[in-house]
Length: 77
Ligand code: SF4
Image (cartoon, rainbow, N blue to C red; front, top):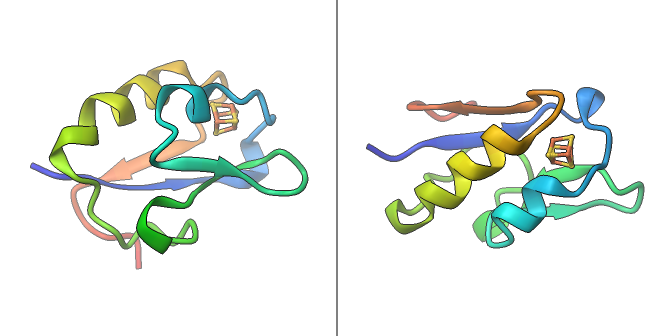
């Protein structure tokens, strides 16, 4: 089953780990904080992540030191 994802940016410490694990899903804003840029999601959590990226997504979630990457089976908005 696919997942939706958002970064809770108020808890992000700009470590860069998620972007290294899943560069097709995450990028960084001007302050270095992560956000979901996958297919124009703009960190809204409304874009279903493709199945072939689920492993990368899980790696990013597991690597986040502040657990601020949130996933759900349902869209966030
Ligand atoms: S791994 Fe977590 S703390 Fe690090 S940049 Fe990504 S969202 Fe932010």
